[in-house]
Structure formats: C-alpha cells, structure tokens
Image 1: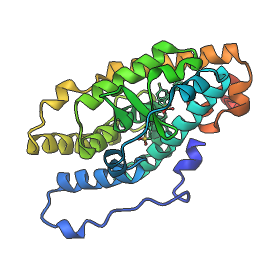
Image 2: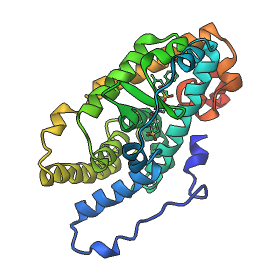
Image 3: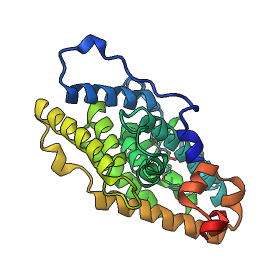
Length: 275
Ligand SMILES: O=C(C1CCS(=O)(=O)CC1)N1CC[C@](c2ccc(OCc3ccccc3)cc2)(S(=O)(=O)c2ccc(F)cc2)C1
C-alpha cells in the first residue's frame, strides 16, 4: 500500500513556486516550503482549529462510545489514524528531496516515522484547558476511549498531546519537527544513509535558524525525546497484538490495509521468497 501511495503517478509533488521571495536564503526557502506542505496536509487547518469553538461530547454520547464493542472502537481509531497517516505520506511526498530518495528508503522512513508525526500533529487538535482532543467532530477526553481496553496507551497519547500543546508550537515549528521525524538518518534498514543524512542536515539547519530568528531556541530542550515517541509507538504495537489475540481475524478482515501493513504485518503476508 505504501509503495503505491509513493508512486509519482499517484498525485505528483507540487514544487512550490517561491518566486516572490527572492531575498530569502536557502534555509528560509526550505522552511517556507515545509510550512506550505505541512499546512496543505493537516486537517483541520490551523484557522479552523483556532476560530471554531468546538463542542464537547454530552454524557449520553460518551456513554454510547463507552458501550461500543471493543472491535468497533478499535476499527474507528484505526480508520482515523490511517487517514492521518495518508496525509503524512502526502506531506513527505511534498518535502523537497524526499521523492529523490530510493523508494526503499522512502518506505523505511515512513514506516518508522509516520505514526510519530501523527502523534505530534495531534497537539493541534488538542485542548489543554479541558484535556480533550478533537475526535469525530467534537472534543473527547480519555474516558471516551475506554472500550478500547488500553487505558495506559490512551493516557500516554493524551500526556504527549498535553506536553506538546504546552509548548505552543507554531505551524512552522510543527512542520519542521515533523519533517525531521521523517527524514532521520538514524532509522534502521536504510540503504543510502549518507543521502538521508544530507537532507536531514538541511532541515536541521533550517529548524535551528527558525528558532534563532524567533528566539525560540529553548524549545529544543522541551520537545518530546526520541525515546518517548518510540516508547509510545511500541506501546501501540503491543496493544495491537493484544487486541488481535482477543479478536482474531478482526484486524485482517476489517482494518485499513495501510494500517495492517504498518502495524500488523502477518508473517504470512511476507512474500514467500523472504520468509
Ligand atoms: O488527532 C489526530 C489527527 C492528527 C493529525 S491531523 O492531521 O491533525 C488530524 C487529527 N488523530 C488521528 C486519529 C487519533 C489517533 C491517535 C493515535 C492513535 O494511535 C493508534 C491507536 C490505534 C488504536 C487504538 C489506540 C491507538 C490512533 C488514532 S484519534 O482516533 O482521534 C485518537 C485520539 C486519542 C486517543 F487516545 C486515541 C485515538 C488522533
């Protein structure tokens, strides 16, 4: 699925015409194109989030979610996170230099980093005052997700969103942070590590210059650590396995193919030659 989504045929990249800002230095051009790619692939858009006074779910609606079967709630979340990951794939395709990497390395970087970008992007849809997140059109607290049966994972997701929203990141900061979560030369299985490292270097310089320009250098020390993001993604994988043991067949029968490919690859799915 990921391979198909990356094929240039499926929606070409839009190389942003930055003709109107001839005075900018390369790193500011890069920052601007990352910001445009980020804004184009986040939903809802920043304006919609700020302007709108989102409603919270009523007690009855929360009870309805809490009494849904576990499999139904898992399917809902799997569908929504897959939609979010598809937008992250689109964001990656618009990142200058990403599509020039080998398909193999593009897939390696997305498999390792797409979920981390979704978790970082989540803080945009998070309301710190009420500790709620936008879910299916209204603001939901962790208790709404009770029927998932994984309270620690839900708590970790909310903690991360709470921590990130306290940093009050700008869309440019979130865009460059997301780009650096994807273009990470430290990921395992990369074929052309030096090439990824060069692209990562440009993004790192652009991020640092942005932070210096806006006097936000202190942000770097307060961002979630790679270990925290990795731990959350591992917790998610453990819970997917636990869910599959409780409900054999549901994931393969009714979860999105992209979700299955990323988080529930069956040994049986692996091409015979490499089993
Ligand atoms: O916020 C987003 C999107 C971020 C990218 S965007 O472009 O700004 C559109 C909005 N989210 C995408 C969907 C959401 C999501 C987040 C993490 C996640 O982790 C994997 C998982 C799978 C199954 C069970 C538990 C956890 C799954 C879905 S959600 O459903 O609202 C959800 C929320 C809290 C929670 F505790 C569980 C689910 C949050």
